[in-house]
Image (tube, rainbow, N blue to C red):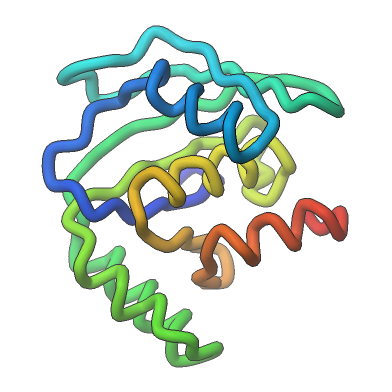
Length: 147
């Protein structure tokens, strides 16, 4: 699996609608998103442009959640608690954000994951850890420069 983050989503047929994501990104994250994704596409390249800092592209794909995804969420939940593992079980869909150059925790990937988690109402999973967290923790990581 390429380096990246998984975002659990509560919708079962979730479109890769970058225009809708962009409105949310501008309103709540002071970031712009651009890309040509809408409808039944399985993946889209998204240009992420924060108000401060460099911009870049990330590939986002959508797929059904698997037993492996839930096992990673459960493992992360067992390590840290908090209830987000249980939330993952209510999410039938996964958005995968593939990062460039194999670095899953880079700021652009993390801010895009936070935007998608806030749209999809699900947790973010870093399979490397595994670590499961929500939008609040993603924001804290960005502010602390731990992305």
